[in-house]
Length: 387
Image (tube, rainbow, N blue to C red):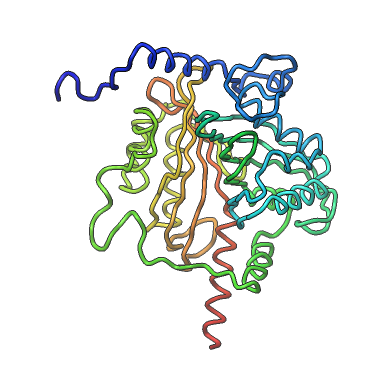
């Protein structure tokens, strides 16, 4: 490699000043982890980031996503969805897709009615973008409350629950126009004492009656015919070398099944925060949880859909990766004995990397969605047998 290869292209003095100003703006943007809520929605704070088209109260993109979420959900100003979502906003969730703003409003009202004291607390916002090209935010919350009213979970149980959710949003001029919502729906079911299999069957039956199907794909991106997994990771979605390296490591672990890489990239004192609000410690725990997920879908392809990162005030860098896994239920695990049915998983993982080692991992995916897919596939199979 020549001396100049691999270096960033030179910029003019004007370009250098613009880049430096953009970096300064990014460092001035609020970070969630070490601030009390009132510091995250400040009064009288000057705007520190260009926010063309945004309401005057928002001083940066983190302020925007935390403040408007609080207004809509905690202050019950559900009507703000009209000014903060486009009329045709598409929201991809683990249990289905919403295609318009009115569905967002109905869903929000129904959840607030069933859980009157529900609170969602921001724990991280990782973002990139600007007010010209659009912003992307990955907003992780811990949500909790009590099940005191009739609703999607049926008769009130009076029990409390805690769950983790990530909402990845694409935003331009004050409006969210595309969103991916990954909730750990299985956690609240178990905490409320509701049978997951019965609940999943009810959801699957409604989907079956409306003609929804599980589409079985014979091949996925990991393998093509009889070729081995791709040697190199696709890093085209990376914005910097840190993101590219993380994508390479994830490809090595999930697609090449080289789980030993976990020993190299995780700190010995790492903490893992997973579905069902599981909290685990150490490399051995991370290794086991990773293998368990892949063992459930042993022919899966792991495909990162988006990645972004921010320098952390706590040191190091925090990364957000939205990903999918696609394959077949051919292994034992929390979903029961293998069925062979097709499974699709959508998830989001936040990583905190310090000195080249992952010290914290927060991962959210929905085991209830996976169970619903298996129930729906069973119904399809039974119906086909009757033809």
